[in-house]
Image (cartoon, rainbow, N blue to C red):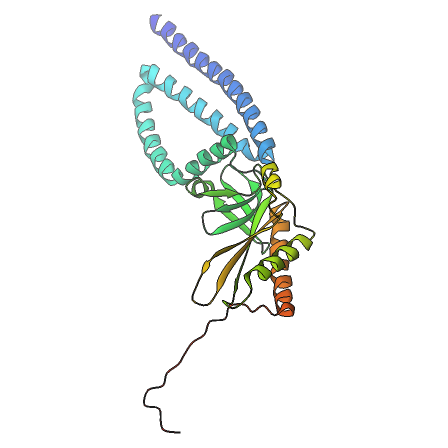
Length: 283
């Protein structure tokens, strides 16, 4: 009779563990659902992509419940030890194979929390990748470059690189217009031409501070940066509202300044080479 009662106690214990696992699974799914809906709204992605994680949480909870039942009931303990040994080996293999995937997921969560960039920002990742952020997932980030190609970068790679974000706080950019003029060119005239052509462009904006206005600084500053063997290096500081307009502004100014220099007779730097022939035959 005692054996019969003990068997019913074991059955009751197993049912209790399963009920607790069921309730815990519901609670965990609800909490994960709220978290992933919030993350999906920030990342501008479909929250159904993360249903895998909710299903995985159920699997883990029920697996722990089964382990507890097998370890607590003596008649099932030997069978459970064999089962756990095989499951442990399988888990080790799966864990080793998916280490990179979980690393990307953790890095994606950090991107959601710290938000170094958002969808639509123009970024440069390291020294190789630059473009507009098109999509962010918990595994990778998609960047559309200027050739309309998509660059899919794992989040672990992004976490280990320097990120230059052109639009995270202030979209205004200062474009450097760097031109080398010949040594005999009039510097003042060349600086004035660069200023006039820049201020004439519709994308050029006045970004002077109140202090700079009080000092009478020009909207476009052009400075002499140095001298090389063949050129006087001039640099114009021209501001634009955003990186897209800044790129157009810079390329347009390269063309208009060159045309204006040609009309005004200002020569650009041209490297000169002297060639000496040895054993040159007499003329």
